[in-house]
Length: 224
Image 1 (cartoon, rainbow, N blue to C red):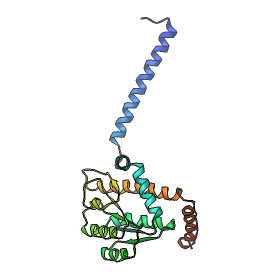
Image 2 (tube, one colour; image 1 turned 135 degrees about the horizontal axis):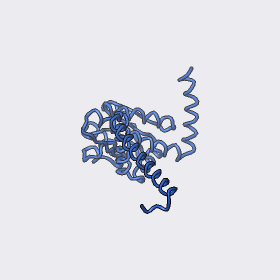
Image 3 (cartoon, rainbow, N blue to C red; image 1 turned 90 degrees about the horizontal axis):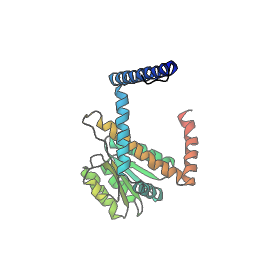
Image 4 (tube, rainbow, N blue to C red; image 1 turned 60 degrees about the vertical axis):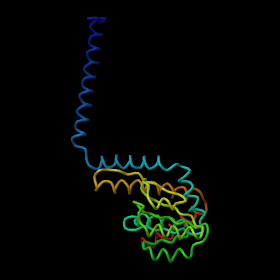
């Protein structure tokens, strides 16, 4: 049989049995995972893919340019309608914590009036997933007149709003299921905005110190 004796045969049989057992266990485990895969596990994977795709279409230098523009701005104007306002409102709050003067609006008329107080070098950050809101394009046009810088946040599509952007942040999040795709978009966009927030925190000791002070002042208000 080609073995050097009984001990050699016994050892080889033990090895073969162990390999067979491991293979069967692996197949059983894989089958069990597939059969019992929770929807949350798949969602986690799809979110990770959307975040990775979004990272790839936003080069580091482009993201850094947005962070620098916001950090150097005298004032940052932020607007979004509907669900886009959820992202706009949260990001405006974070910028305020860093001591960056922020004007947030979810109404086109109010923002149009607010923009009259803008100056050259200020930033307008516009959230619009599909990039088709005519009112937002008009506000961007108005903002350019005063030499402000426009940053748009939209899907990775060709859209009218991007045409007005000095800097564009793009989100890639696609799924055939209508209840899943918005979740992917929200997750990928949040990850992108978090990266900009971290850049702003770590790019200036002054901003970081203001953040710490604001958090300490706010804590007693939240937990009286």
